[in-house]
Length: 362
Image (tube, rainbow, N blue to C red; front, top):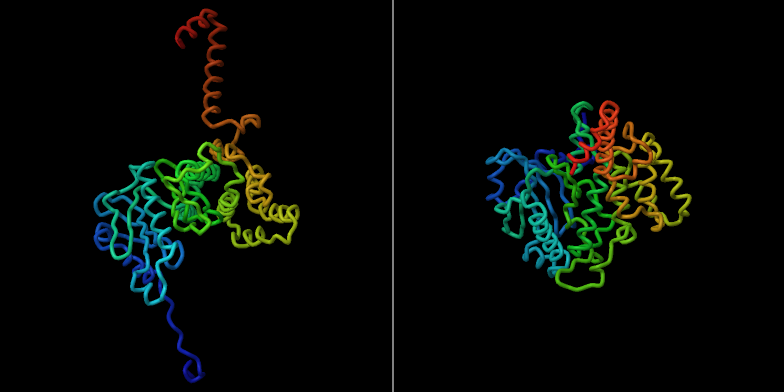
């Protein structure tokens, strides 16, 4: 037998195992915080090479809860000197967004943020969140469970929550321009409250991203339109397609090909969508509008924010004229309908019930 060396071939290098990758990444967590956790699992790494955010899932030794740990690693001054490269806008923007995301969560979801976990050490910024996972982790968990046990992903709820978040960031926090960067790892989820929101702000930054603080602008009283966030809406649609098993990169490539006329592009996209959304025609139609390159075809912000009306578009027994009603209105109508039915039944036996019923309501 001839060895690989005798054939002039270099010996094969063993590929790093998942365990070794996990162990290497865990070292990024400052020891003070790392020692407070067990069962630490590396989830993902986001952002450019000189401003990486590493995401971990870990079990608290104190409470037994599963937490998300986020670590922003910035290049050291020595590394920048060795590369003959001064600190650039990327590092400054990454640090700004990382801290502003933490401050935003502290003000909007204070019960989620573990303030004492915030550490700045050796060019890393770190903090932990409780009761949090990512859409990708939820998707992975769902695939691994049986249909009976699976907590199915609520696509209308994702749309409603993420668009509401984008509107808040645009109008109140003046953070705009996430563009096409939104991925499954960038949408966080709370199992307890069944709520989605936009995380990993640092993964979407670019020089075109607008982040202001005290500056006055003319948009304070302007309402957000779908046209303002067309790229974000397209990225959200691509994420939802990915949940169904579609090849996101192929769909994005198709959308970027401006040599294909719009009508032909939409026809090709619809053919692909129909393979995965056969039983969800309304969702198919909505996604087609979201990825349209014609901004005038986009759904309105209110349409999208009210997508949490239904868990799915084919809710059993729901009348067509109820589909556009907010979920709480549907429940109110259903409750009112029951009251009317009971009242009508009682009036058959005692007409005096009418006056008594109204006096009780008052």
